[in-house]
Image (cartoon, rainbow, N blue to C red; front, side, top):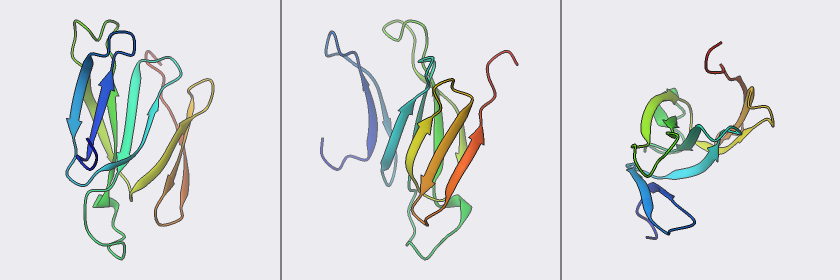
Length: 115
């Protein structure tokens, strides 16, 4: 699967692939939310490094259902950013830190479901 520019989600116990999301230029970072309800993926969408535009990448937010064997993992939203290389949630899931290929680091406040 080398070089197929995708994110795949597997059931570790059964080895069954639960989801496969193709991305045109590749993903460089993935992170589950601490509560396991969301998967974030980030990477690049093309263009040279010198093309430092906000549309040069996205952070994709996928919803993980209670039983991913029975329900599909779905894309909730995507946020335009410059090429994400790192994604990490705080332990309580209220903040997300991202690092980008242009050297910037961003701290995001995460809205909790039901707030």
